Amino acid sequence: MKLPSLFGGTRGLEAQIDLYFDKVQEAGLVFGRAMEIYLDRGVSEEYGDLVRRVTEVEEEADDLRREIETQMTTHTLIPELREDVLSLIEQVDEVTNHYEAAVYSFYIQRPVIAAAYRADFAELARMVQQTAEEMVTAARAFFRDLSAVRDHVKKVQFYESEADKITTRVGRQIFESDLDLAHKMHLTSFLDRLDSIADTAEDIGDKLSILTIKRMV
Image (cartoon, rainbow, N blue to C red; front, side):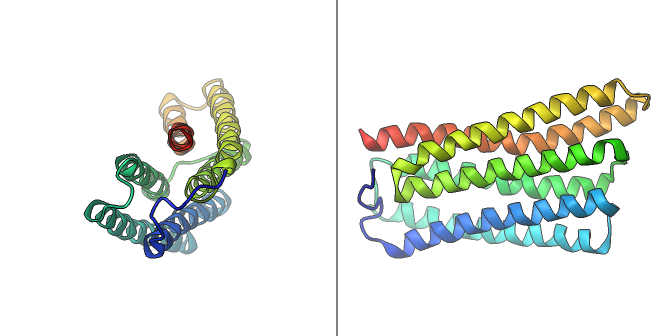
């Protein structure tokens, strides 16, 4: 169900929102690559470069978000949905913040992940990134084609559920292992940190479902 633009033909604002979503996706790609590098060889020079890149992308996304918010609050564009869309943009920003926090946590704390768990951590990182990727696609659809939102939100829910399963399964395996308690707690805290990205993306997906219904009424 395609509807007229929320912005009454304000192409500049539409382009900024598209670029903003591009930055969120880029942060996810850098996050995914950083996880691959860390699980393969720990904190290396390349990993450090990726950490810095995530920070740069997060700052670029923040600048765009502020420009979008300024335009939306100073112009009478979509009065009936303005607050909802502003809230959506701010909530999406939490995902890039989570990406940055995750890679920095690995960089600073350098958890020792045994070979037995590395494939599971890698799979969790992929599921987390995929959850957020589908969320961004659903958010784009909200501004372009409402008929596509539902399908992508369903995918968000699927990948988030898979991330939860991995987190639960691996956490149980870690606590059943012979590792000392401090090491167990350390590793599971990183599982939870990664899983929180998927949780946030799912929350945004739920919000998009509600906003889509409101817009279609």
